[in-house]
Length: 336
Image (cartoon, rainbow, N blue to C red; front, side):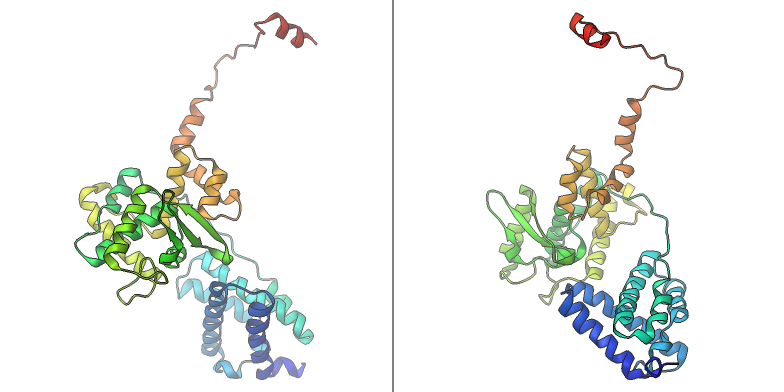
């Protein structure tokens, strides 16, 4: 066996260069991508320490082989109860490192190829859940305007529904990203450093104006901060939505037992735009989708649109009349 495969210093050097050179310098990866890869290797190294008894500083390339990676993926699903999507995202990070190792350390090529041969796991894609217009209005009106948190939550929910923003995009909005004018808008910082500007409804713009006057926020502060003035976390946003949902259930009983996350509001925005007749390519731009193909899932979830399509199809057994041209000119053209 090549001594490099058993040298902990070689593994540590490759891992450090993968982050410092490959991700940050060569690819100029976004901070969120770097954080996701970092978290993956934190989990992987801790799992490897548990299984091999070696601390991360003592691990070598031959310790992190395909067998360990497969066991790690099973651990994510069985013990950490991660979804298949999360499992695949972790595998993508490990495979990116394996490709880098294959180029930088030829003796480890066989080990890298075995890891790269691990397939992504297929999974069922459930129908998208969304709220009706009455349910959305109940949730938006639920926060108590008599408290600081209630006012902040009212703006948070209004912006989520108006823009269809991801939670990470919502928490990244600064006051300076909001333009309140005759045509109000907000600039969102999406995945992969992509930015987009989304128009604001008059009601949303009014909520933001009242909030900024009340909270007296600076231009560099988050639009929806926590009590310490820092950006809200994903967990914090989900918890505040759950509180609003509980309060809204009293006015809208059909919300009882529903699982509603911030991403559900994103789906709801897309569905309501679709039902209003907005073109699907515009919705894709609104949501920041890489391709309109991603947006097609909303069409599948809209039963009303399917019902209208069904109404245009004649049932089996219906006689179809043959077309007869009603004009001499058309009859001439038909005879050609």
